[in-house]
Image (tube, rainbow, N blue to C red; front, side, top):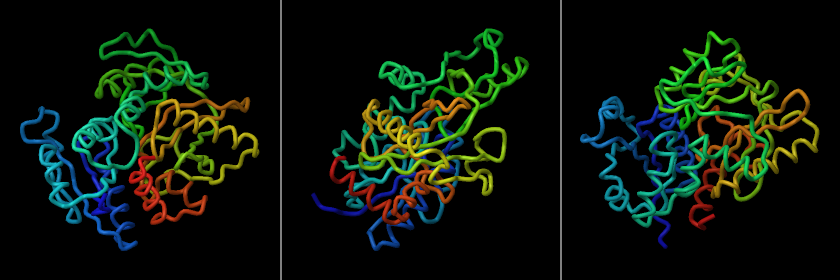
Length: 324
């Protein structure tokens, strides 16, 4: 197979579009910095798409990327002789298996997990069910469809959309009076998942090529690791390696690897977890396309493992080429 051009696919139409563009820009810079032929494509919905796509269609494409509609994606990739598609998409439409399915049908090589693992990881209710069946420790949770009875739930709990990432629509509820607003925020994206709140330290484990990366502790400046904490400079501190006993770090690594395997992930992933005050680990969710921005966790962990950003991107591309 010809090695060809690496096409960095970013943008999309999810609530995480802006973050995806930042990831795409950084990956493109890394590839070009390493002397690799690369192009960036900003994926946008077709003009005939549903009404909720209109805002995404109207968003500007940055100068460093070429705008391509979904219907023109495969012809555009072939015209540019793409050997590997680097998926820097996040959220609905890009991280949930849909684009992966399109690329599969076209016989294109792409980075990250396949259709099934991507779909399962994006659906927090389904992934939690699989984790429980595999014996992994996950907080209790229940679904609440739009319009459900807010009075049926008691805090403290975390309310989040069933299928979103980057803390989109996530609320920490401590009092019963906060529940209605929290559910309404999550319902903007469909079903809400109401999860038992685990007080403690926030940790994350990256997996790359079948091995766990160094454990990272996240210290948010706010009450919890919300959107601002994730993406605003200074919104959080990343401690890597996390200041925890070696045995606990190994256990967290095993938990991240097991979550990766249970979902059938490929190449790389990042699993978020909590360490409660009794020293127990709780798995929250797994991300199949972790962020690649200057403030993202996955590159921080890789750097601690000896892989700078350019080397990390090259490794991700190589894993895709090898089907791993």
